[in-house]
Each structure stands twice: as structure tokens, then as C-alpha cells.
Length: 227
Image 1 (cartoon, helix red, strand yellow):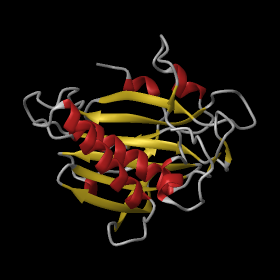
Image 2: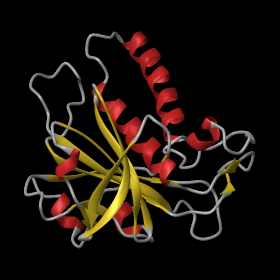
Image 3: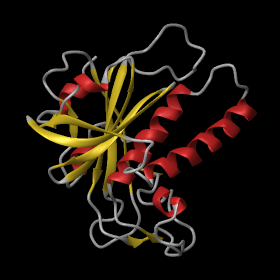
Image 4: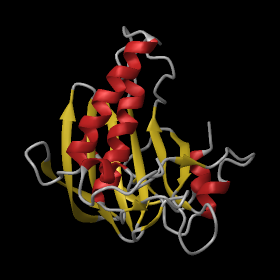
């Protein structure tokens, strides 16, 4: 989501552009974009004994340093959400979003300004990620896009106000130490956002209790490529 024009700092639209959604082309080696990142990746800690899997890593706007460097990405735990919502059976999953701490910088096309990343960046990525895998199956394609637009706008507003009444405090372990998060639950699942050493963290899930999860830096990404 590269900004295409300058926007007023602090608006929900500007917050939505804090972590742009320009995707890195999928490499032959799915680990390549993760290994190219200059920040640690986080996932659920050893308390999670189920399946782990990779999602996607993304590149941000232009800034000093290597071109198209990785700014954020996600890893999943449990059952992968179905690509078609009509697929039968419930899914239990939790996805952890890691966001690099970045200063404000120009957008990729040079026409706008991207704000520095913050916990709101992680909250929005987590919220939009949840929406992408939980849209109501009874909606046709046209109505689905309308629903996504409406819900994404709401996710932007909520992410822009982490201290507001739409969120509750929740303390969870990060690398074994208690860390404060902001948490919200809806009919589609739950979303939370906070911080970890060197990065910002977001997470979303369904069928897995957010109150029972913990996070840790990933020591071996290969564990996320096993069947």
C-alpha cells in the first residue's frame, strides 16, 4: 500500500500506509525473503506444539539501504485458513505478524510520505489479515469486495486508536518475559498488537485462545517449512 499522495499525519488513511503492501515476488526458496530481513522474526513459543507454516514477507517504501528490503511478514500456526470460505470444517489457527521498526520515509514512487512504523502498523496488518481469511462465505464476489472495503476502513480506524475503547489490555509472554499488548475480539476472530525486542508484533487467530499464547524469536525458520 505505497502512499500515492501526501496525507495529513495522524489520519487513519496515513496510518494505513505506514507499512505499504508492495509484495516481493514469490521466490523459488520460500525462506529467501525471511532470511533477507534485517530484523528477527517472531512466532508462537515452544508452548505451541502444532503445525507451523510460512505466509508472505513484504517490502516497504524507498529508504536508504538495499532496494526492496523486507519490512514485515507473517508466519502461521495450526490449520491453514481455506482459500475458499465455502470449504467445510472449522479452522484453528494463529498468525504472528512481525513488523520492522522503520523511520518515516518517502513512498516507493516518491509522491508521498510513509509514517514511521508503530504498533498501529502491526494492528492494521493483523486486522486486515484476519479479514482476508474470514469473509462471509455467502457473499458473492461483488458484495465481498464491498464488505472488505467497509471492514478494512474500520480496521484502519481501530488500529489508529489502540488506546481507545475498542481494545483491551492483555499481558502475554515474549521471550519468556511479560509484555503488554492491546487486544480485541470480534465474530471473525481476535487481533492483538504490541512490541518485542527490535520489532513490532501483531497477531490474529480463530479457534485458538489468545489468552494462552506466547511469543518468541524464531531460532529455526526451517521448522515453518515442514509438512
